[in-house]
Length: 170
Image 1 (cartoon, rainbow, N blue to C red):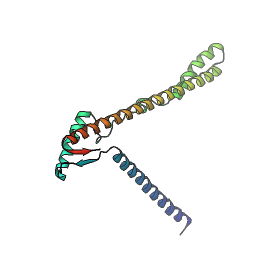
Image 2: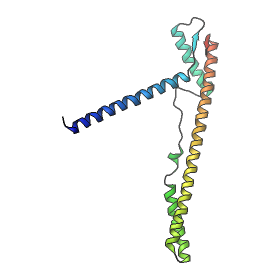
Image 3: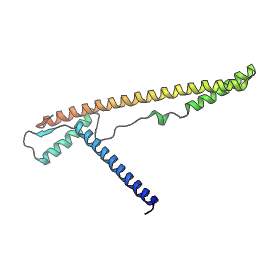
């Protein structure tokens, strides 16, 4: 077998192992998240499995309507990057160069003015970009806090409903 054939086999083996590892990590994370937000429910009055399923379904519906949150649905995501145009630095540099060229032309040296204006405009564009990213991170933190609060309200409502139907909930 040639060296090229061995590299191809090694590459396929590595990619396959990488895919398996990524899948396993995702699966472990999903299980951990599901276990972290779930409640322990015990049928205190000897309810049948069918009755337990019916009660849990009805209580999840009621908890979602009471809390305004439904953990079964994905949380809505907002991203300012989709709304904000890219290229603040380049646009800032272009604007600065144009203004610098005009100012430089008045003083007799348009190229120096354009270079200085481009540097200043690029810096201003970079500042705008950092501010946009900072605002986006703050929005994401606020959304995560709201989702966590919604999950807590949902869990309290679900526990209240199930306790009212004769279950012990922890």
